[in-house]
Length: 275
Length: 254
Image (cartoon, each protein chain N blue to C red):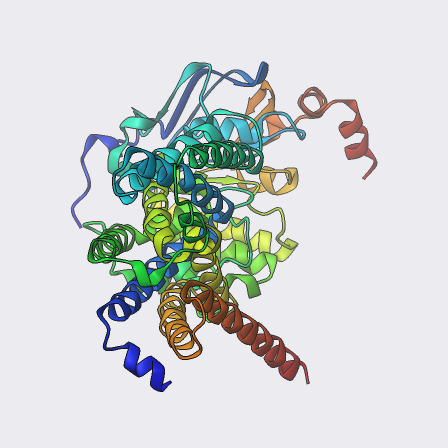
């Protein structure tokens, strides 16, 4: 703990905590919709495809963020279009594009000359390496997502519950579906630098699922998901700093433990009520 | 209250007017050349065997699936030009709630149907009144996952009632409701029709209830086999033509 307090004096640690909390808030918020719309495999695919975006940045010798963002955005929209245009199951499509993108990504990576140690960083992320631009982007995305989704909350819930009913009520279902995928793809892209391709989905899925165990009303569920997301990041960073664990995995570990705790708690109370 | 004289409330304009409607599911014509009109304040039922295109017809009327040919007008306008008149339509499909574990309370669900209108009540008053009307006020804090099938149907009906509508479309809405619940539903629909001149269109399997509560029956078997008042439309001969010999044998023996 003493180590952690010393670490707090360093700007990189302050940035890491800010990024972690913002990421927890943003992913917890979008994740609550991802869980209900069963889009978690979608964000998983987008995350893996991000490798292409990163490799392109390295090959073109530009900051990978600026190739990653447009690439994941286009990828997300293209995949949704593909799902809408074919009769195939969406998980088949997602598997196809995930595999294709991963293959391209790995081949592109093989063209990168010299040091390729960054690959581990891409897979697991490094929250201590985030800069002010990353934090700014995350914050911007958080503000935009919260404003849009809260301003249209009635439509969002309705179209999550039943698209046909939403359409009859005049909700532009297609517009909102694509808009959400745009926000989700960008979120995955900005989160990857901090937590990596392999763990980004945890941020979207675990806090929301934990909140769903706790609440059977929508607003408490939404708030719970956001709060659990942010709380896990803070505790995860403390764990990481105190025990010298890698940061991203520490946060995910906290999310996972919270999930198990809540799961056990709900099972126990259910058993208690039966007694 | 001043009478509403805007043209869309004209009682001589049919609420739904369908002309030569054909809908394909793939290459198969699920609904073929159907035409009918529903006048304001009437209650109509679409009956027919499974796979006769009842839900397809309803979905095509609501523009949820594309139609091959024909025209559909609601309140005298094509559905895409309805604008805010859409709020005058209540739609309750058979499988409104796919996922019973969806974290939403009864109040939150009913609230989804509410929109601010000039003449309407405040949101909370409207929700309370809608829930009272379907005898579900005591359920308002419950999660939808804890409701019985019949309770959920009543809450969904409250969702439809939370703002004044002019057209209510129910697609096998009473499939999971017990006999008493179904009778209560029909009484409430009759009341809405009488007092607020709602127009009701429903897909139903219960020919007895249809005969008792509807003004018009549309027998569908891909195309319209018969239509008219229940006594005439539900004649043994028409039923034979709509449902085929198996059903009419069943009907005679019981």
